[in-house]
Each structure stands twice: as C-alpha cells, then as structure tokens.
Length: 294
Image (tube, rainbow, N blue to C red; front, side, top):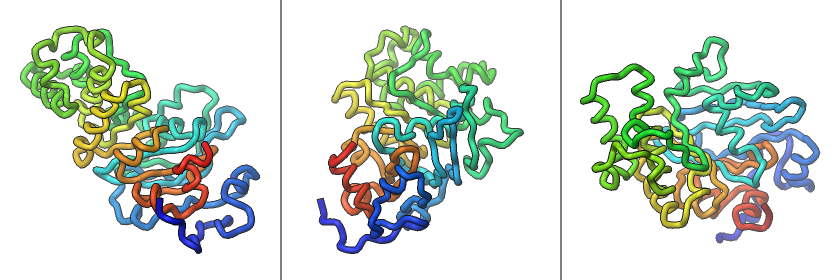
C-alpha cells in the first residue's frame, strides 16, 4: 500500500477532508458534501448517468444525492459495507424498486441519454436494454436452450435459425458453450451453481443490453466458479458496459476498471480502481479498502 499523500485533495462541496471533522462525521450528522470524483471519470464516455438521485423507503431515506457516470465498455464496481445502498442503487437502474409501494425517488438517471424515470418511459422496453444477474443463480425451470433465448421468445421471434445463432453466440460469450452444446434440451436446473450463473449471464447478454448489472454475482459460488465468473467479466468488458456490486475487495480490485465507494447511502469516492485501492484521495476510502473498518 502506498503511503497516503501528506496533503490530500479537497472534496468538492461543504465538507473537506482537512476539516477537523471527517467525511464520516459529516454523514452521521446529515451534513452535505459532494462525492470526491477523480478527473479520469469525466474523460470517459458514459452509458449511464446518475444525477442528484435520492430514494426513500417510506420515511427512511436510503440514497442521498447520488451522482455518477458509468463508463462505456468498462467494468464499474460499487463497494461499501452491507446496507450502504449498493444493491438499492443497482436496482434503481432497471426500476426494480418500482415493485415496492413505499418507494419514492427524486433526481435523474439516463441510459444512453434517455431518461429512465420519465413519465412516458415504457419500463418493459427499458428492461430490454438492461441485463441483470443476481446473487443467487436463478435459471428458469426449462431447458438450457429456452433459458438463453427467453428474451427473444417473449418478443415473438420464431425463426429457428435466429434462435440457434443467438443461443450459441450467447453461450460462447458466457464461456459455457463447450460444456453444454450437446445437452441444450436438458433442464437448466441440472447444471452446477457456477454453470447456472454463467447461464444467467448468457440469458442476460442474449438481448444485447446496453448495460449489464451484476449484483454480487459470485457470493453464492465456490472459489473455482468465482474465478470463472471473474474471467468471464474480463472477457465481456468492451463489448458490454458492466455495473457490478461486490462485497469482496479483492474481486473489485481484480475485475473492475472503476470503483465507487459508498457509505450509508452516500457515494464517498469514485475513480479508477487502481487509484481507489492504492492512492485514494480520502482517508475514509483508504480505511475501508485496507480493512480498518467495515
């Protein structure tokens, strides 16, 4: 670990790291501050832009003035202690939180320039542009083939040549083709946990999404299967823009290009992964990534 700089750059906004009180003190007191965003982030084209985004569950506020730009063709990791809002933010992107009656949001999210929360947004059409993979593999109780081409089926595609091509391309993209090509009509539930998760990734990329959301995709897998998923993430970036939640610091440092550190519903620092882990601008970020708290 590099030694932290003697004088750390100031955080934009009302709280600065050289103040007597820390950023965490400001958070606990409900004082305003802006995320410390590294300049490299602004140099990237963004597939997803989040601006002044807030979310409440009833009276409980879960997200505070979140702002970030998710770069095109890169892997962006969300890290932070349990309950800090990582998965909540991720699920806001494809509006999964709409299913909760008490949820209220303010602010803006844009996917490739299109508003995600506009009054005329067709949520079904929006979700076709966004792939999502959850913590626990969730293949449908149908064949491997039907799992992969599910999104095409619901769009009314019946051309067998098209379906076969998409199935093979997606399974190859998920690194699963050679393992299942001779049993595509077998139940997906017969696959191992790691294979099921790669199948879920194949299902997600079959629709060629603009952004792929991964919510702790390895938390239910053994180390070998985790390694396969991390290798897969490396292979997919470039072709896909990936936003990933992980509680595993080593995984974030290995698998992502950019990392955002969240704490109690706030985004504290956001920048290139190498900088976040080796040269963070905030002492609070360094304390978290080095295991001093959390």
